[in-house]
Length: 324
Image 1 (cartoon, rainbow, N blue to C red):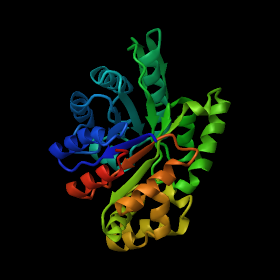
Image 2 (image 1 turned 180 degrees about the horizontal axis):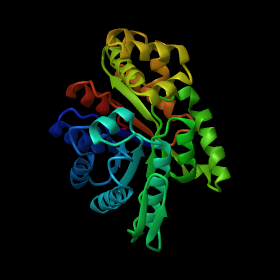
Image 3 (image 1 turned 180 degrees about the vertical axis):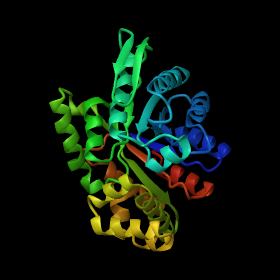
């Protein structure tokens, strides 16, 4: 089983501690998100200096607030610091994040993702100076970096999945139901073959929201809150969940956006929690983890602990689901 963990931001100190402890629990990769409050790149560098073998991944850096050249330098530098253990996880983020925090227009996000990943891969592995005149981003005469770092993309909709198919080394789906993952990847595989790429070269690494508690109802309630937050606050996530649960996704989003977070959470059904994440006692959660990992389309699971849980519960979940 290839099992990674996306460590939640409990606080600056505990986040690093949880990531370092993940190596001892047998995880083969540790990932950090980045939205606001801390630079995941700096933290990942700190984690790299405190660990030996575990892969170090960004999950995710957005393709707007850093230029393709900065992202390429970031990936290759982190890879050197970690002795070849880096993975660059990218995504488009959301209009609210990009426009409100970074003062940038959220224009043509899929096109920007495509061109950014294309430029990054050329900058990392090309033989000559890179000139790229894109519709969203461009570079001119930039020397290559001579270091090959895997690039994963957090694509939800069909257009973004084509970016994965044509360019990325891995796919980071989130809020796409487990029951739909195989058919969702079929589209990527078909597009990859049309682009003369082997679909087997694309690592499928879904985010799997997970909460473990001796009280299974408490664990499930935390997972409901996680699902409600994503469906309610991100249009891309709402559409992803709506592919399987159209009526519920719409009702959850409406309640959340109306300010009724409690109703939005209550609208998340048991069927949805089972199809979108892991929740339960340690024994129940490990059984569910193994069943998900056995799905043929999945190459590695990235367990992600919901951001709202406290540090003690996050540590308990990471420890309980680790291979060791």
